[in-house]
Length: 88
Image (cartoon, rainbow, N blue to C red; front, side, top):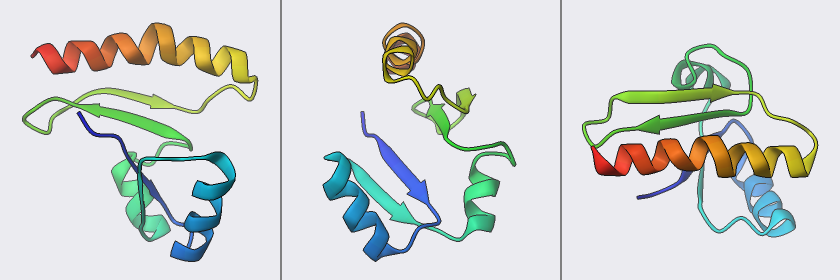
């Protein structure tokens, strides 16, 4: 399992954001057009879960600004979908 983030921010800005928020996963810079292509022209943030074959099995767009609600959503929805993807 690997978590990877894409953003249209510059590599320098990515470095600052990773430090500020303590991000330990890979963050790659891409053009804004490529970010929209990857998230199928949806809003941001977008979370995409792929199965072992690279097929999209879950796509989530947006997020709650309330940290507790966001954490609960990840714990109850996204985590279960990740578990599902790992068992396929």
